[in-house]
Amino acid sequence: MDIKSMTIEELSEVLRGLGQPAYRAKQLYSWLHVRLVSDYGEMSNLPKDLREALTAEYPLTVLTKVVRLDSALDETKKYLFRLPDGNVIESVRMEYHHGVSVCISSQVGCRMGCSFCASTIGGLVRNLTPSEMLEQVYAITRDSGARVDNIVVMGSGEPLDNYENLLRFIKMVTDENGLHISQRNITVSTCGLAPMLRKLAEEHLAITPAVSLHAPNDELRKQLMPVAKAYSLRELMAAAWYYAETTGRRMTFEYSLIEGVNDTPQLAKELAGLLKGRPAHVNLIPVNPVTERNYRRSLVKNVLQFQKMLENEGIHVTIRRELGSDIDAACGQLRRHYEESKQELKV
Ligand code: SAH
Image (cartoon, rainbow, N blue to C red; front, side):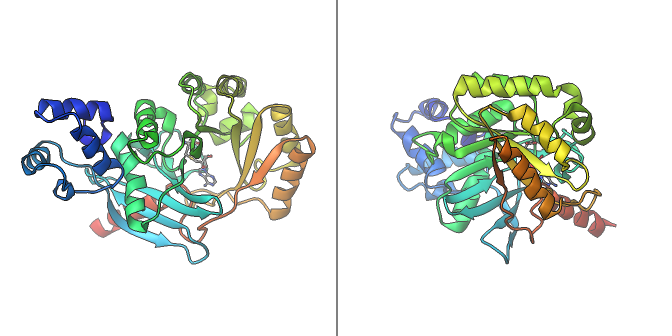
């Protein structure tokens, strides 16, 4: 395993094997996960021979910035990073009144096949390691010089399809010896892998769970999201309420509004029926048009009407504020456009 994916306990083992005293683990963990250095050479309180041994045996996973797109409209910055194996992923840094949020990818590509999402067009390439998830946060922290307050696992990939690495990432980024981000400030969004959501409930984490719903009935949901063929809404909602009951956390449901597809008053009513009286919060997202798809975003008046109808049933609703709409902010679009331009350069 790469050294940046190791917990402090695992690091202790490695260092013990190298004949080091116990306190070295904390020192090394701090260099890696608090001071965020990208080279053993900078670890000034470690003996030189240890630094050399580590350099030889444990190469550090570091992401390289390929491009950064800065929104001209707000403080949003979108990053394209290169991984050690040459694959590229994207992450986004956003500033809200409650602090800095970073949206990270959990996989290279995705195999879930949602029809409105650019991340899934080329399928799944591979899972990200815990260190590659951490490094997105670290590289952005290094680049901006400011602490990250919130993490949303809502970039490319399905986090519950990379379960063990996701859990390790959460454990490490919340560790008091690391960045020590509160579990409450971490949101994990799933397209609806119901059994995995139940499994996650059993971990008793205080993270914020989000489910991408996008349709209030199986027929429409199956057209938008292939995962709906594997797990019915009935199974998914049962898993969501089980999650809320087990952890005491309120469920967030994401609903991307596509003009004429899932934004009618009838569907708002159906959605209200699913959520009424439950510990639920709805986040309405005007769909980001993806070049490869024909979807258009709902008209503002329809978004507002959809919201109103849910609120009339006592359901808590927010409309996602659009940040960075000028910089390819839709999931996976930057990576896709980058890969395409590389292809063009080859021919
Ligand atoms: N796989 C996870 C997390 C990544 S996607 C999930 O499905 O939840 C993060 C969110 O962005 C999901 O709600 C997803 O459905 C939504 N999304 C993807 N493409 C979008 C687009 N073009 N416009 C609006 N939302 C989109």
